[in-house]
Length: 99
Image (cartoon, rainbow, N blue to C red; front, side, top):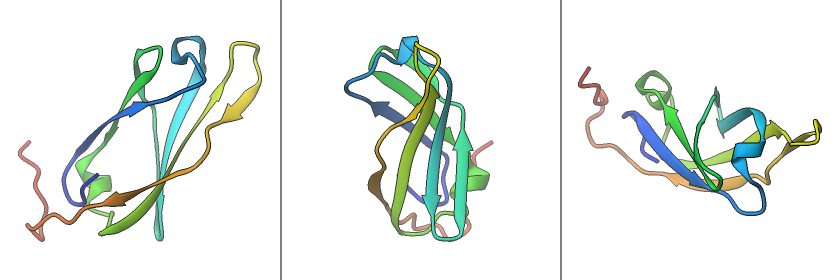
């Protein structure tokens, strides 16, 4: 992930078939920031999450926690383990939004 620029995250998961889940939400948390996104399931083991520019401007260099929650094929709510990943620096202080 990078701060100050839109992020397109391709997330791979093990142990669950994403195509059998419903109501999937993907969370990004850093001190002072919490984002909730609706991922696009692209295969049984992969999803695409877009963190928009507006939210990426709130991220800072350091770590973020990632997690997703869902309803499984039996109708039970569940969530993944929390994963911590680094947010890399973006040199242009004002960010980059070509749109």
